[in-house]
Length: 135
Image (cartoon, rainbow, N blue to C red; front, top):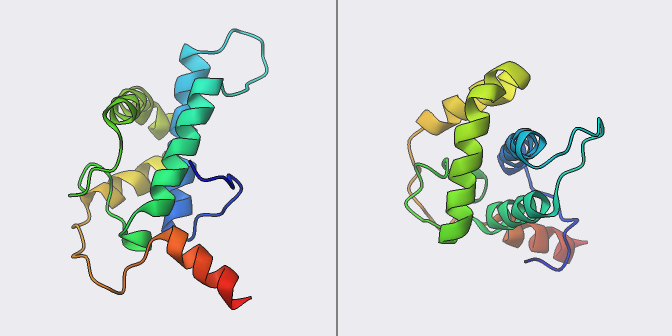
């Protein structure tokens, strides 16, 4: 994982990260949380969230990233892919009620064509490093 967990995702990647975070939170709330009244993500879900953020950061498509389901590059490890599928199957239908705008945006994004990779595309990681080097 990235040593600096406080990095920022740019543009569409941040929107996608916020959507998956909401899905993780819904799943964790209903599967891992006792009825304490105060929500705090469990360690496993927090670790998965950090993994997702790192994968989004390193995606070679950058901000033109297709949805993971449509992507020809499978960058998740098999266990993490299974976690993602489990979380999305549970949270997806509930997102329409809890976070309708995020859910609709995600469904629309999922229908877009996969862009052809080219040299102008750069990962969020490389874009962040380039911004730091300019300063």
